[in-house]
Image (cartoon, rainbow, N blue to C red; front, side, top):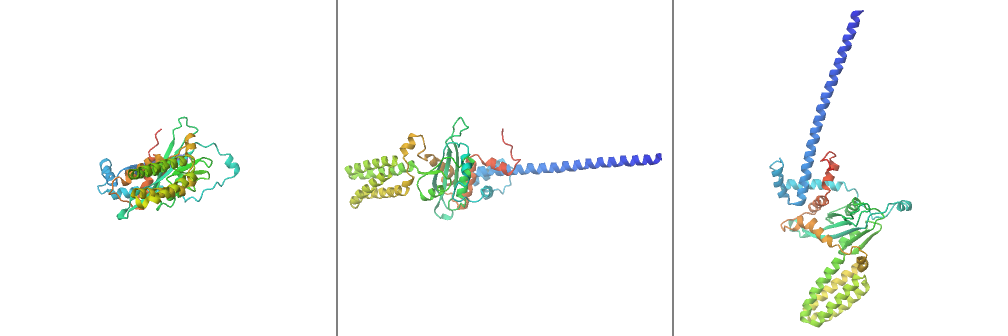
Length: 388
């Protein structure tokens, strides 16, 4: 009986030791697995960090220079070249594109009247300036247009500093399949609400204006005063040639253009168009006998067509100015230079495909908006913990 009890105790002890050993083995295995996972995650994060830096640099400087820089600062293979950098950057841009979702249809508010009334008080008005620039096409196919712009929130109700918040955007209109979705997501990222005032301003070009006319149920579309004055300035320069030949006629035309500018400033387009019609007739009467007059006549005709095509988008600029509202997208000129010119056209030998230019615009605007790192953090949750 005693022997039986000893045997049972021995078996129990042996089983306990076996179980403890199994636990230790499991813990060791789990530790190795966790270590391997940690190593893999760390390696993935390092690769993601390298890709993020590569995409950032490629958005700012030529691909060949990025390849040279990578070889200097990272342990990359010697085979890395401009084509490698281009492919990696475009892969990043493609992933950004995939996250956009489907294209938006013409925007209409679909909520109930109660839901509309329950919306919180929005931030200040959003002004969106849109303009176009041109880049050289690959294979000597001329140039194509790139649309770029900037969105500025006038003020934040919870921000005592009232520093305007701005973001830029860009796309190739003849390539992009989601221009509405792209601009909509940009505005939503700035906190746009359905009941918020949104003002679109452009140079009046048909292609640029088409991008604006669907986004927001209460958006306002205005012609940019900057572009009106630029065209009038060109006309006044042409009149100087006429003044040298016919001083009195030139002085009269210059005075009439100033009057037309005054009417446009106050939003009186009917009177401005009537004055332009009279001036056009006057110039046509003498154009056959005067080359400067013919030049002015052509300029007046072009300006008249420009105003006629955009008359519904010309507000009372004087009233807007006195109320502290924006009347010009002069800030977009610097945006075109920042988004497009500095990377795409400053060096005349640079040529682009529609796809290549469009994809690079997506990573470049992410960089300029300081959003690229956050994008990578969404893709790789353990990527570079955000600074406090």
